[in-house]
Image (cartoon, rainbow over all chains, first blue to last red; front, side, top):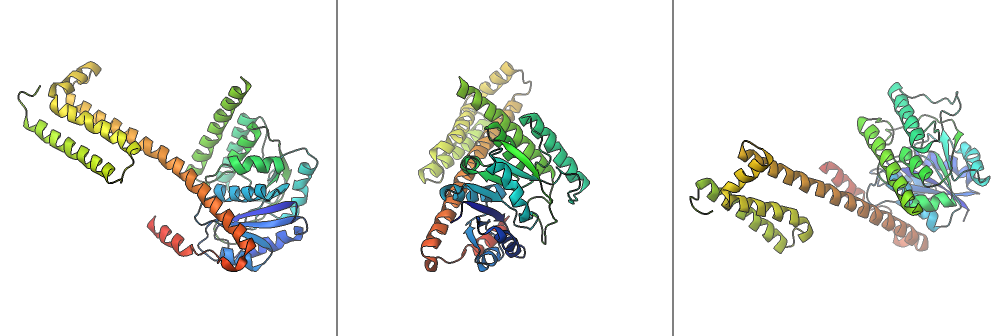
Length: 242
Length: 137
């Protein structure tokens, strides 16, 4: 058993998952690969098992990204991994970046590292106008609530140290679209966050469940959640100080 | 209070009683938990009271300054429904959490089991279930 694991949440990624596992397995000497199959209705689980390079956790009912990711973090906590890396199951996140994302963790500069598409100017990722506005909005809101600038608050490419794994196994935002909330939650609970520049690719094939619908629901839900996490946590902190 | 019992009072009394008996019967048959029936029973009682005490509606409408007393009836009804719906949202959210935790723990245990004795555990046998669940919504 290795000291770290790569968590890959996926829903109906039958065509992509094997490739993602293959790519991630270049780190097989350091990281165990963990696939969280969020009750896919296709053969995702089988495709992942066939590679024989990953532990596959099949959720018996669909929980949404947040619940799936948390399952992986709970597993990481139980198995006493020191590091966990979260990678999307659609091939958007190039595993080569794992090395540079780990650095701030091993150097003890941060507890959670976020792979950002926008930190470097030329990162090769194109997205629609509306989506960029949405991302900018969360960047500003995040800055207001945490005092730290996150250029890519919706990025799901993240690395956690042991402290962050233990915290997030219990407190991870478990509904849909958890990423921007996670930043506020982590920051207000004293976890140190750092962004690292990565280049992302377009998903290999199929429909995205997470980010293609950059909808009104998404904006409202995430905004509400971020604001309430802020008030909830600052209230708890005040009570703790008394 | 009971003098001049009008037809509308009889009808509303019958309706309210029928409603209350329905709720009580559901509790008796354990179809509703007592805790969730409390709001229904409270508002059922209010309507029984108002069926008897016809002037009561005028009285309370006068207090809050509603000129047309029956409007107060609708107000009470709407407030009742809103309160009960909010109560549902609370229950729903807590159930959401519980189901999530159960699902996660089950999946993790299954993975442990699979590691110990791979032969005894099949792959996901719940795909059929998911498909039927999906056609429902």
